Image 1: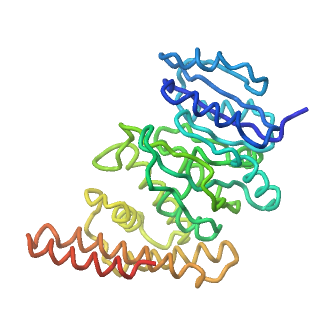
Image 2: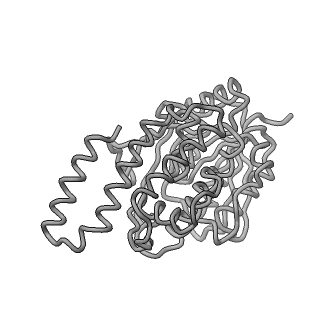
Image 3: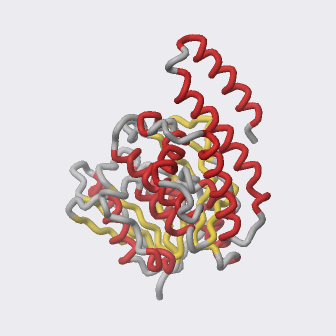
Length: 331
């Protein structure tokens, strides 16, 4: 008999926190799951750690290094469950995580995936910070135009959704970020949510990929932003204008052409919100708070990009005052 949930844990040289990650899944209050652990060519003792477990729910696979996206796709293909739950090698799932997510998806058959809130640790040290992303479908879809409002390792997705959208992209021009790329496709044809509870520990590790400078992560992120915005606005704006907006949204001034006027950037945001609402059968007023936040953020970055460098110290002081005023208007 197939399990209802398949938990997929890809491992690559993850021995430092691997036992914590595995133990957190085995300690779940919900018991009817299989646990697929795939060692993606580790050179440390990860495979020794995995092999030390005798829990019959664990299915251990070892392979030559393929990369994260390909490894996850293999796990999905091997999974027997109707629901796929993600787990990372250095994160921790709290005991009620699977139960809460399964209950949510069972009660909401029109939702394709659901994440959770997560507390943030720096290595082994807990912090007071957390990821408390939006929980409502409409707000999440608007957020997805610019950012990733989901904690990857906290996600539970229907296997049928993976099959319908094609799984994780292995195209090097689209990943990393493989999670944001996939969520963008999933959200175009499914409702999405986050359980508003801290049910996961997200561990920040040294050496995380930066969004600064010219790196693949940033370039791919902006390209997916442009794709999302183009779809939300029905192709009404030029690719360069969309790229300028995306770059400003992430403070990536080096990617801006400098040719797009602020009024056009604001128009893109408003049209994208209207398009998101229309596609989901909702009134545009439901996103007004999110639109105001995004507009204020774009205005700040626009003035920072345009004027801070040429006005010297007085310009930076002006921008600082403007930033404080805009922050007071946010949300």
